[in-house]
Image (cartoon, rainbow, N blue to C red):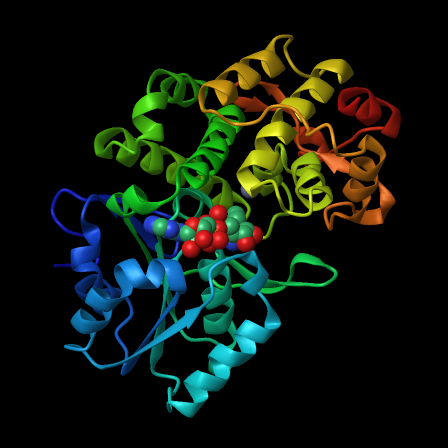
Amino acid sequence: MSAAGAEGSRSIDAGSYRVIIDTGLRHDYAAMIVAAAPAHHYVVITDDTVGAQYAEPLVVALARHGRVSSERVPAGEAHKTRDSWARLTDSMLATGCGRDTTVIALGGGVVGDLAGFVAATYMRGVPVVQCPTSLLAMIDASVGGKTGVDTAAGKNLVGAFHPPAVVLIDVETLATLPPAHRRAGLAEAIKHGVIADADYFERIGAEVSDLLEVRPAATVELVVRSVEIKSAVVRADPRERGLRRTLNFGHTLGHALEHVSGYSLLHGEAVAIGMVLEARLAERIGIAASGTAKRIEALLRRAELPVEPPRSLSPEAVLEATRRDKKASKGAVTYSLPAGIGTMAGEERDWSIEVGDALVREVLA
Ligand SMILES: NC(=O)c1ccc[n+]([C@@H]2O[C@H](COP(=O)([O-])OP(=O)(O)OC[C@H]3O[C@@H](n4cnc5c(N)ncnc54)[C@H](O)[C@@H]3O)[C@@H](O)[C@H]2O)c1
Ligand SMILES: [Zn+2]
């Protein structure tokens, strides 16, 4: 086994690290972790749900290569906090983890962000290997090097850039992911199609039922293409000064809806609604080809995702929440908007377009 992956695995160059994708790859995780980030001590960080399914064989296999400890947090966004970070780092200090430690993030995006931030800060930084188990984490959170935790003031406000040593993706683990989370992950894949690849957008439409059932062949291709798109954007603009903002399509209104719903909408569900509304904004401003919003809406419906804001949410509260978003720098709320399926608008404005409140009210009404 080499760091490049098992025979037949797909391997994508994400800049300083590789993303390896296959079915059944988890059986080779230990050897691949040791090849990419050899250490004296391996710390597997997971949550209770994912840990119960997948942690033990990994811990046993890693124990053949060094000292291993296993850390668990309760599942869910509510635990992506500084408290969890403090507990994890205290525990690592108590078990005597030195600088020669590799952290393994085994779980969804919550575990990936939290364990990544632990690795970024422990002894001023130790390697992290991302082993994402949710579709969202596979195609989005594990790639790009952003790590962090939430605070009372908002999501992801304390964190660090800390690219992984390698990302290991076993699409078979999606078999146990609840269907709502599969759909939420698909929303981000559809976003990748809109921002960068019209053929990919069409292909998701043609294969949507296989994708909802996470059939291996279609799912591997989906993860590969999404990781290619995300990693190409991140490589071109690692610190989000320009092109990386295109990944925020659907997210200005998406984050606001997510927040105002009290997080009863999953992130991907909020982004689905956000994409439809923001595509309508783009059409009204005259920068998107007409029909763009309808095409996005039709595909999201086929993926069984919501396409309109819940009636219980007040449009004014949503508008207000867009102003709280950290992307609203200097007071103006900006959007990353499509020119059509497969291309984004506003390159000359660093991909961030100001939109007046009146128009936003119109699409929210
Ligand atoms: N760093 C980034 O660039 C980036 C990008 C996008 C999102 N994120 C972050 O990712 C987080 C959301 O990620 P998420 O949707 O994966 O949430 P999550 O980690 O909470 O996972 C969703 C749920 O699915 C469960 N789960 C995960 N994999 C499973 C599996 N294979 N089988 C059974 N259950 C499984 C988890 O226990 C959890 O209950 C947010 O905190 C968001 O801020 C980060
Ligand atoms: Zn997102």
